[in-house]
Image (cartoon, rainbow, N blue to C red; front, side, top):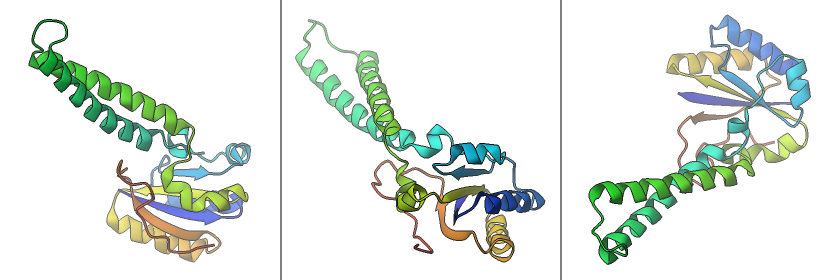
Length: 184
């Protein structure tokens, strides 16, 4: 799946883009508008970015799960080798310790991610702080991606195409992995 990202100065542009998306038979929930002006987005009856969209909860949660799983593995190995309770740690106990600490790591990572901006929106931070709007459009079909880009360019030139991203979140990435098409 592709995520097309468009930056614009006005919500009227986003409204017009949504009308175009509907005529192209792009799903009603396929887009999100990210901005500091959440009230404006809602008053225009547009889909605003959810907490999961705006924050780094998923990315940081994945990182926490990986770190917790690694720490859990080491802790389970330590328990298996030292037998501190006086009996050997079986495979079930080994996995339970590892999974429990992995889940704890995911929870801690998610809590940290709630206080950070989504790492994929970092290139747009200054524009969003300046009051601009970022529309993300999720498109499944590659042929539709080209159609959406062509339609937006022709019908909504005031919306600046910024990036085409995949929806995969890489827990090892510290910066977005897409190339910006325009810098403003």
